[in-house]
Length: 371
Image (cartoon, rainbow, N blue to C red):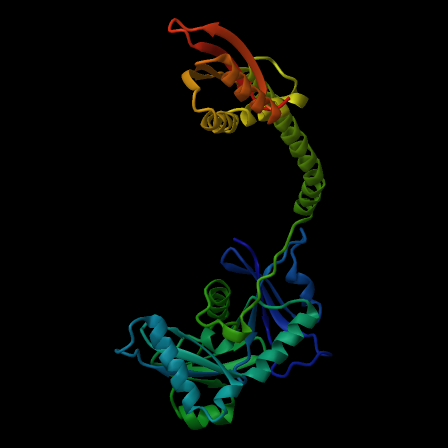
């Protein structure tokens, strides 16, 4: 189990005062103990790892209040919250200046610890200045086992006495006035040690809650830092490799697209074009397609309206944009006038004359727009 350094907080925190009682606890026992000013060095173990730190708040600065379990509470946590509010309301100080923490004891009672906000801030400033900010702050009064008999103990520089729901500093005159002739049992060194171990491993109350909760710090080991630096250096290289792979894949995809384009162009125009001319060649065929047929056919019909003696007997269209038809008329002169009119409009016209069985003149012609 990880070692824990337990140390006693001063009643009045003074930056010039470094001395404190301390106990080094590990494996369920006190490994070392002492008092002096050099104890902050024990906050780290011989390997440089930070030990868990638990501070004991003096009895004179923290008041404990006890209350029976609230039957209306839905849970022990809610019962403790209700008890904390009640303890603050019953205190003499301004509720805004007090900090509370509570817990439920083994016998079902609710215990609440009250301390001034200013005192908590002074303790934290004192420990941070020494480099020993505690993970937990435990009221030293909670170390005293409370039962039906009066008990007393000396823990560090604190002497305390208590019974039942009462814990207070052990001052002879005050104790005599409260205890009277009743017997007071003093805890043995072994019992005090067991109480310190229990406070280190499973404290009843921790004052480092709410506004005074310890902020988690992200600690990165040196080895991890080297790994992160190496990873940061690899990021540009990985980005470059990814870019190269992407370019290669795009180039391969482009080659496949070019090949597919040439294949489609060849199927459309009947010959293999180059990549530079494929778009132009296909555009010409597309322009001579549906649009070319419509224009040539419209021009032919317009000319037929002017030559009422001409009729068409056949009509066809080839994929290269050429309109094919056969014209019939009583004489070839009428057909020649129509062909000349189409040529004047810019159409390319070819004509093959022949004689129909009924004596009419017939001409097989082709019409194509453009030069």
